Image 1 (tube, rainbow, N blue to C red):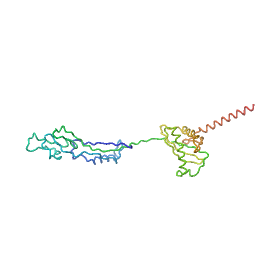
Image 2: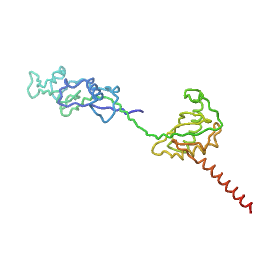
Image 3: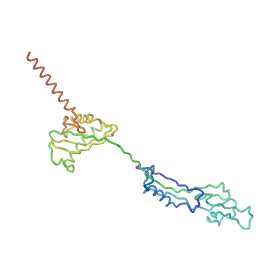
Image 4: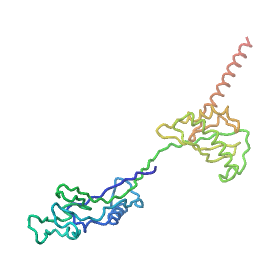
Length: 276
């Protein structure tokens, strides 16, 4: 779930003598040294601890050639000498000439007695290792500071201590109450964290996180809180005290001022009409 596992086969040159092919442990160590070498830049990230050998080729088996009269006592050492082997007492035409193992295969050669060397299958020796790559995705977020006052509530000094029970209980209350409103309003909303409380009655300071590509404006953030105020009973919200990133949002204050101005206009109009 956290990476990609790769199986890699390592094939050596066919002309390489079997005795000089590196051991599986040497192949494994070579990759580990490359991964841990600070002077080597790789396009993928390797977990050096995950590099391991899965399988290695079997020991080279004797190769039996067509029409050879030596089929039982021939050894791998005889085959890999590169010298022609003949059977005394027979004609040169009936004797088979052996080839070196390096000319036939880089690993365990598979042959069928009674057939020509050209028709025999060749098995290439593979040393397989596994590597694990890790992909890291970085998500950039936008942080917004939200502040509002809870009128009529009593501030206590233990709310200044983020480790106190009073702080933790009130922080959990604000988080669980407000997060659903913001999650429904903005698809980019991530979470809400209460940062501190101040006296007066209680001033709540918190941090909201959004995906930066589609973060809402300060007015939009404040409006969610204004709309939610009438549905929240576990704490109070002064709609005129809401500020985002240090800037007070006056949607609630403007509403109240407009009502006062309207009342003054009506009152002034009534007074003027009553004088006539």
